[in-house]
Length: 298
Figure (tube, one colour):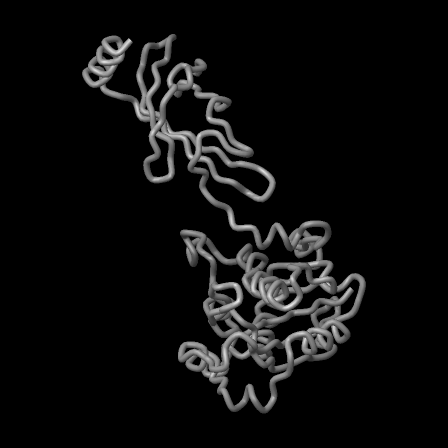
């Protein structure tokens, strides 16, 4: 089994055909490693962009890549990844990048260039950022935020030239040095995903909050409301209003007689729906006034 550490540099651009913004890949760098993390081979290629003819100022500032370098060394996206596929060929190879944002952008570019999000030559993937974060002390990252490659290198005592960062092959070498500091052949297996079936479709799916009380995968009448004080099942209200992407209403527990403001937030995931329920107990005066108003209406 070999590891393939890859890194992408991209240019933010507007795709007029899809009428949306995208990150278009302009460079790929990669290291092929054996199981002991020894470098076996390297890969580097500039890619000529199709959806924008000039690099953004931000892209040029971060990467130091110029339009002239792209014109001189860049090749077509499909040609570049045919070469990369041949170079990285191996049934049990594990592809790695610093966070799965590179994998997401690669899938996005495959959609734009081939019509499919699937990347057939990647069958195993490991998020190097996620793995390395396991070994960062809580005191160094108390909020458990995602850690940038540069910050991780500092924490692990990896020396690097900041002026050379944000070039694909250089970032691969920095990722490798971070991995070497905490590499464990057994533990890293826990972070390797099989990229089969709908893996890339799942990766590209963007979760969203549901704003209709009855839609595919969600029916508010089937939500169980449990009194947070006594654990009794409460009645689902007949009417809700949408407030900050949550369905808001009120309900009274018929056992302990407490009244609550109810907040139900439903989020559509790729193959399921996540439902979170919040309860805020209503003061007795407000609850009495509310029930009196309901009785008048009834």
